Structure formats: structure tokens, C-alpha cells
Length: 166
Image (cartoon, rainbow, N blue to C red; front, side, top):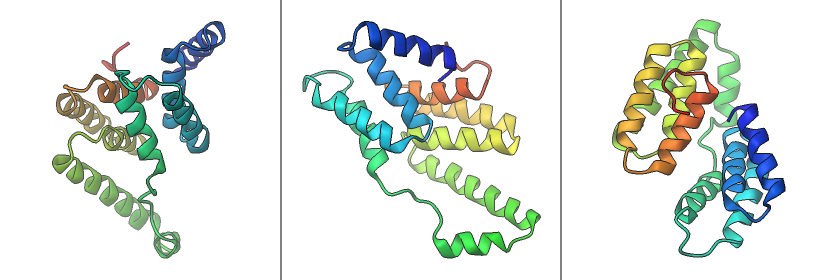
């Protein structure tokens, strides 16, 4: 989320503290920023005040559940082993992890967070064409779920990608 968007949502929250919309998008921004503890608290607060039939509840529940799942990060032994790799070997390892994520998304195409990670990874690696292709694939795979498309588009906007929506 851009600084301007965040500022606008924060002003909207101040003006109308009970309005769900700014609170929802600020919780999403915390999630995207990797502020797990704050994001969990924000999603829980939203869900506690939510009418059960609110259309955004399933997405808020999914966001909270994804934050509460253990991170599939490397083990201590893997981190130690990576520290002893040459820069070229480390780059190969990173490229392999990104390729594994891309393969997993072929069988789990509705994982918006996975698509966001893949797009971000490609951009960090300087693989801009792959990032653009992943964004297009993500939008196609998630087309039926505007909340998930919004997650991917927000990441793309944050990365300055062309055609990433408003």
C-alpha cells in the first residue's frame, strides 16, 4: 500500500472509527508489511465487531488464518548451511526456492499470498518479465475472488508494476 493510500485510510478511520473499510485495508497493509503481531490484532478486532453475514468476513478469516500458520521458512540447519555457500550457490538456492513456489502455485492457484510472494520474489531477483507474467497468471487464477485479486494488485502497486490497478 502506498504512503498516500495508508494516510487516507488512517484519516478515514479517525473520522469514522466504526467504518469497517479503512480498518480492513489498514489490517491488509499490516499483513503486507510483515507486521504479523499488529496484523493479527487488527484482523481479530475486525472479526470481533463483524456481523456474521458481512461479505468481507471470509477474507478477514483467511487473512488471520494465514498469519497464524507457521511460516514454511528454512530450518536452523538450512540457514547455517546457506551461510557457508558461495554467492553463486546461494543465488542458485534462492532461484530454486522461487521455482518451487511457482510450481506449487500450478497446483494451488488460488493462494493469493503465494502469488504475492512469487511476484515480489521475481522483482527482487530482477526478473521483471517473470513478475509481470506471474501477475497476469495470478489475476486469471483469482478472477472469481475480488478480495484475493486486491491482495495481488496491492503488492504489484507497492512494487511499482505497470497495470497493477488503481
